[in-house]
Image (cartoon, rainbow, N blue to C red; front, side):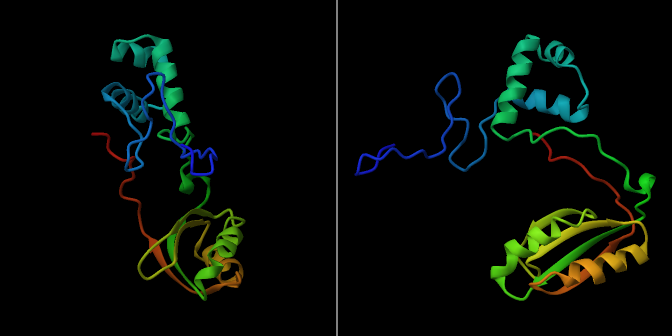
Length: 178
């Protein structure tokens, strides 16, 4: 697109081989039935061979590789990882902490400081009571107290926190593919 001064503007629209946009107007990625089938299969088993996915989808292994690569490039697939069991490696306490900020403008500095605390495994910018909502793992309640008192609550810009300890993770899953 070009503005009135003939300056080229990149609106971020990406096109596939057919010249169709990867993104729909609501910001979601455009995926078809084959993409959805591939996603369901690899979500069920991230270690499944592409040739097995190809056999189950009735297409070539190269087609699966290209589809998965495109889904990664457009951000539908964020990556693959081995998931550790926190309790098996010594982290017995899981908690969710709502963080109140002194000033909204301190958000970026607070998040940057939190990013340096390895026990914080998730950080969300939220609406409602809290400005930030985090998930944290600790080896024990004493370790949790140390992280809260000596680390998190010492970050400049934090007014206060509210902690909710998880007694058990009953289930966890990926978003459902339609």
